[in-house]
Image (tube, rainbow, N blue to C red; front, side, top):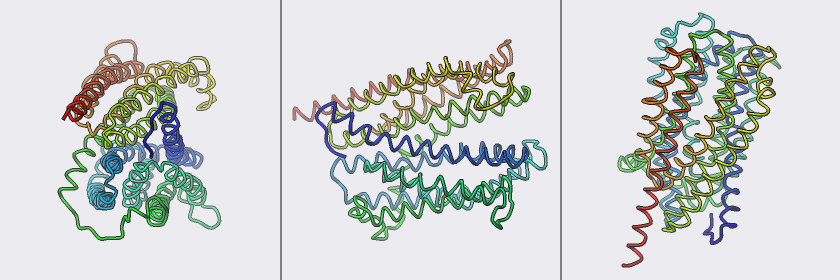
Length: 456
């Protein structure tokens, strides 16, 4: 990354970092899409089993990956303040932490998985697929969390195209292995939905190995001399990493888990309503990749400028990112409003399901406008290493306001299933307003500090 002086240079650098992140995020969500889709082609029980397994795994995976993503603002601020020689040490500590987190997940999973699935009262075949799918995927937990640390370091250096390349390698590997292992082609065992779990675990080992190769061999990583020297575990470094990472992880977890909670609460409605809700959420999640990618770009750029002490530039990037997300969300709102029927048709051929999905998609419009403000604002706050207030705001907005409001509206009014969506929209809108207020406050504080230093 380079220092920029004009808004045009900033826009070029911003898109140079944003575009590969967006492609990476879409490719990562495509992996989950293919797992579900290809399992569904094998059989209904396999589709249900993989869907249950995925909805248990995704909040845990994204939440814990969020903790390890704390390495991004640390490395980007080190690069901004010209302390490149400290990067190798921080990344090694990140890898140690990822290993400890992986072992804890595996230990808890081995004791808790059966009781959780038994509690869910599933059909025996569905429970069996979900259990074996999650057991298979667990073999890839260590490389997946290790890769999260390596990717955060790669992105923090502004080399987001490298992450994009690694993920684009992963997609055909995953789909190819799915084909071989789900359907038992070319003499491979016919594993059904469980094959998707095995395929994902192997894919995680592949991307971890490729990322290691890049970091060890390719520039600008090789000159940072990462993994050339052995560093013991440092509890102080863990503490620094956790101080930034844990609030990031929790705010991501609260956001993803609230959707899983709504899906579980929706189970009291009929099958058509659940299917339509799931389809609309799936499309909204795909659109969410846009503000999420802008959020990740802002963490890198705001962190780099803050580390360099250029507060005005950091503020300009924040305005640029949040403004772009808001404009794009209005464009996707028009798409959903005028082409909702065609979007719904991607998910079903049945007229009653299509009209219900279309109805849910109208709510998704308001949903993603709030997301477009809240998510990039969180990214900018992470760049300033200001993470605790955002985590508290997310918890209150989604779990104290959004979910209870949705429950009350769905249970005690004739809104039914739509009540949950209105609750989520309310929570997201309040969250967006509070996060923006916090960002303005943090920027003013940094500007005041910069002025004070300039006068000394």
